[in-house]
Length: 64
Image (cartoon, rainbow, N blue to C red; front, side, top):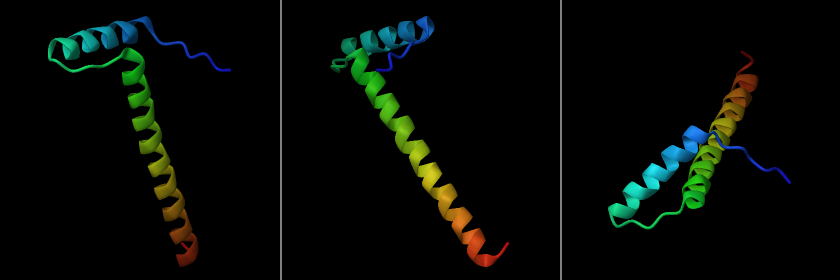
């Protein structure tokens, strides 16, 4: 199984963000924030991939 390596700087930034959110009364875990970020990245890029494929199909249909 893949074991991701996260840059130390990113870990520190996540920790500071988590502490800020905690002080603001929001409950967050670092792994929860990472999962949310990964899900957002996947959704954005999967949507872009679908849009690119759709545009390519339309170009094929028009013959250009």
